[in-house]
Amino acid sequence: MSDAENCTLSFIDTLSFIDRRGVNGEGIKSLFAPFDQALAAYRLTPSMVETGVVEQVDQGVARVSGLPGVESMERVRFPNGILGIAFNLDPEEVGVVLLNDSNSLKAGDSVERTGRVVDTPVGPELLGRIVNALGEPLDEAGSFVTAERWPLERPAPAIMERAPVSVPLATGLKVIDAAIPIGRGQRELILGDRQTGKTALAVDTILNQAGQNVICVYCSIGQRGAAVARVIDDLRQRGALRYTFLVVAAGEDPPGLQVLTPYAATTMAEWFMAQGRDVLIVYDDLTRHAQAYRELSLLLRRPPGREAYPGDIFYLHSRLLERATHLRPEHGGGSLSALPIIETEAQNLSAYIPTNLISITDGQIVLSPELARKGILPAVDVGESVSRVGGKTQLPAYRAIAAELRLAYSQFEELENFARFGTRLDEATRQTIERGRRVREVLKQRQYQPLPVAEQIAVLLAVTEGVFDSIPLEQMAVAEQAVRAQAVTHCPGIGARITSGSPLSDAERDTLLAAARAAMVNLRPDADTQSLLPLGKS
Image 1: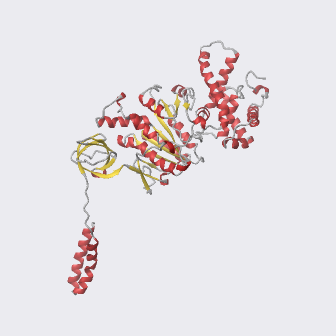
Image 2: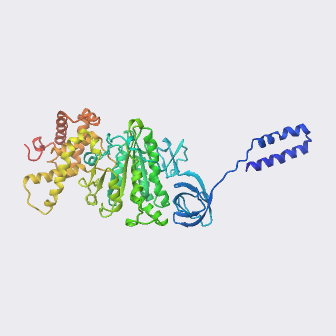
Image 3: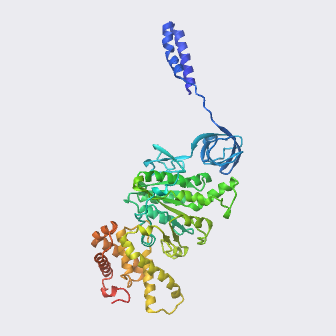
């Protein structure tokens, strides 16, 4: 019931009371005193609302006339609570991107300005939640209120506000941390064909941030509902939602909402970075994001370019990923690390979107479908992958073995093709191939099992020094587990020093190797130490 209706009823009740009780003049004055006060306090203030008319509605967009003062990216409101953003500002009409289901919208409907750019809630209340780009909850935990709302589009930090990437971001994956290291504040692209394990790699990286004081954001763009539900379930079961939140735009959502989602997720992550926190954000994936933007652009009749993408597709992703950085201490010292995901077709890295993103990011992790078919997971193609920044942040213990590891693996890949054709090989070549096969086995890793740094170092040192050379390939998983257990039990002090960033001394190196050889003796009681020496050594 409105205030006017309440006031009318009160007035009628008052008159009825006067008629029944015969109240005198003074009594009438006292009865009407509240009404006099309300009238004296009321001020009529006219307000102007700029309204327009819907001229045409397409799938996900509307053409509107009559909004001459609307600004770019301003939020507009349609009947039935439908929201949109002003996208195209033409002289005679405005192209509006719709953010809700538009089935009820039709030509002739009114539309009004809100005077606000599209924004999203930010704050610690987001942790553990699943929301959309507008901050509306998608889980069953109820609504929430934050103290602040920030615009989705925010300028990237200025160059003088940025600090060098100096702290490693451990993924818990041996092949990444050793051969393609990532630093906090880096932008590392993950790309590969379908079913090569791109999302699995990103999820394992999130799981490894437990206890690392890193806030994680998983941004899903255009994914199937079942795939998103699986990621949510994985994170929830393994306790990762304590330091993670998800921003989701499903494949059935309007393309406008899909386009806005990564910007909203980045804004939410930037709030934590502004508090001095380290943040990791995963964009899964930017291929679908680019496709949604292409769909909107074609509907709004923007001139198409290469592969029908609009001319500003590069700017679309560059202004997003440039927001990932490491801030100087005087600006809070926080960092935002980005792991954008791209899906390729037939390993074509020279397609339009992959080449754009390779040029924007600080390196790429290439996943090979051939390795995935062989069961070599994570299916990382070490030869094609690179990290342009993370090597500067890599722990000294990794640097001591990473070069030798990459060399052994690359030599093995070159020689393996010759071995397939039954080529007669000399002893040195045979040893290189056998060593490489064991390196490849060691780099395998089960999903949901990220490893601590010290255990990784112990295993990688063992394989590069030939401790596993006499172990059959089918026993490599057991041998690796034995070395890890031996390192944890007998070398705890070395593990702590490695994690703290201290270089691996010669004495510590010998201690780890001795522990690895002892593990092999325990694994095969019938074997003596001599049989466990590297191939070609005595």
